[in-house]
Image 1 (cartoon, rainbow, N blue to C red):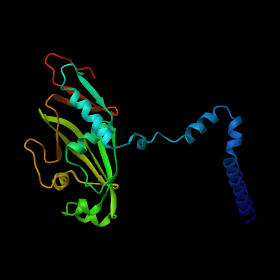
Image 2: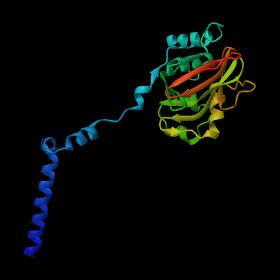
Image 3: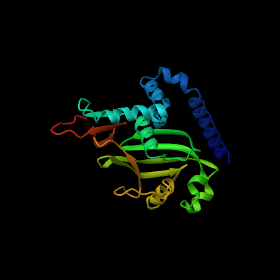
Length: 230
């Protein structure tokens, strides 16, 4: 019995020492070679994707439109790079509004090869037709909606923002349900040639191609014999 108590006492002492070492690590790590850099690195927060989000605005939409219209000029550039807020503001404005007028905090980001637009909207404006099914019962009165997809040219004068990643708060909308959501957003309006999971976006006939990568959107114009350099 005494030996057991002695072993238990030793264990308690060791635990106390370990706690003391941990609580005072900021002091003793300074004198241990190589330990400081490791500790500093572990305490440094990782880069946040939130920093890439930019608010949409009429001014950003105007800049985007000017850049896109500039491709029609014979003296204009062969390609232009747009920031996420510029292309998204242009898309939302040209598409007649990807979000209801009651939406707020509308932002955009390019993450990888996907253009994202998100906003806080009244849940009833999205769930009104029953498109969300049982998910609607789990949502608050207002929720953040995120639309992610690619932007590409369908034919001269018409492009599409094709949705492939839609989220309500942290819930992902099944891809099979996205066409129904788009139908509700567009109030049932369809455009020939535009996929049922995409928003139609009128664009100048001079726009030939759109590429999304590395945090930017690059638009190329139709130019006979010209070579575009990304």
